[in-house]
Each structure stands twice: as structure tokens, then as C-alpha cells.
Image (cartoon, rainbow, N blue to C red; front, side, top):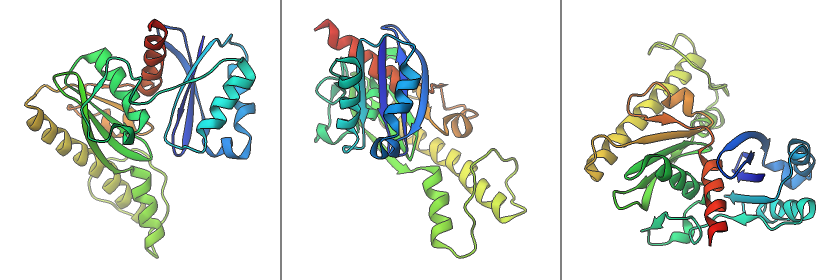
Length: 251
């Protein structure tokens, strides 16, 4: 079985998979790797599996060696860290490839394998990222925007009267309270942002039927009802890690 670790700014997603598919995942706070609480939680989640392979991607450099150390000390194996040099058949056409977030490469690799090329991934995490694989099957770049929680938290922190809100579904376009007005701006506003940027990507790629996959914490809430979204794939990053590990074993 493969242990997979997607280390994000806010959460670490730990997955377990066979060589062919991701079976399940668990989410823990990334800060728990710094406090020392994460290894216990990871062991509890993985204890019923015989782990003989591991892969991870990380956007938090301080946590990467802690995850690698956890895998080595608990399972006696070396975890494969995904980067631009080992992301399977996903070729890179980007000026500084080492600056690309490895989670973005994992997403793009998994999307290309499932839907071919061209394809776009929208990841609703701490930031909202758009990643583009062109018709040649090459990663060519993308778009980064503030995440929905970052936006609403910023409004709370920088204004005297706006509260911190919990993101949830909301209907209508006219707020009857401060909270509902903020939710409408966040939910409907983000849908508008996603729709406009997808339209621009379709025109630039000259692909009006461009497949677009959504993943990340708010993917289903924001993108699930948009006709421009081909599919919501919650485990896309872990799937990319699985593919990269399997490809590495073939070499």
C-alpha cells in the first residue's frame, strides 16, 4: 500500500492507495507537524495498512523533512518527493520550473492522465490556482488568486464592523444582513471569477470545449454548479502523487 501526503499551507491530506487508485484520505492541520502532534495522528490513520511505498508533495519547506523522517522511521522506506523533474509524462514549458508548486504539478499530471490534453485544474485551497496543460500535453503555467477564506478573513481583519464568517451555501443576490452580504460576495463573486478566467483560458488555448477539473476544499461549493466545470475531483492531488510513484517504479 502507498502512503500519500499532500502538505498544504493549512492542511495536510494523508491518503492511502493501491498502485491503481486512492482508497481514502484523512485531513490534519499542517501546523501539527511543527508541534509534533501529526506523527501520532498519521500512525493511527495508517496503522491498519502495510505501507511499502510513500510519496509526498509540499508547499511548506519546513514540514517536508518531518514527513520524510516520519516515513523513514516508521516504515523503513524513502518517500518520493514530487517535483518538476519527476512528474511522469507531464512535460514542462515554464521559465523557472523549480518555482512551480508541486501540488500544482500533481494536479496537472492526474488531470492529463484522466482527461488528456488540453486540460485545466482549478484548486480551491488557501489560494485559488488555475493550472494549464496545453494541447501538446505540457504544463505551461496558470493563474493564482486569493482563496475564498483569505478574502473574507482579510475583510474582517481590515475593517472595524465586518465579522469573521463561516463559508456556507447561500441563495439570492441581495444580502439582508452583513453576514449574508459577505457570503453573497464570496460565493457568487468567486463563481464569477472562475467563469471569467475559464473563458479567457478557452480563448487563449483556442479550445471552447476545454475540460476543467475542480479540486480543493471549496470545490464542490463554488464550482459544483458551474457548467464550465467538467468534474469535481476531491482526491486529485493524491491521485497525481500515486501516478508519480507508480511511474517512478517503472524506471
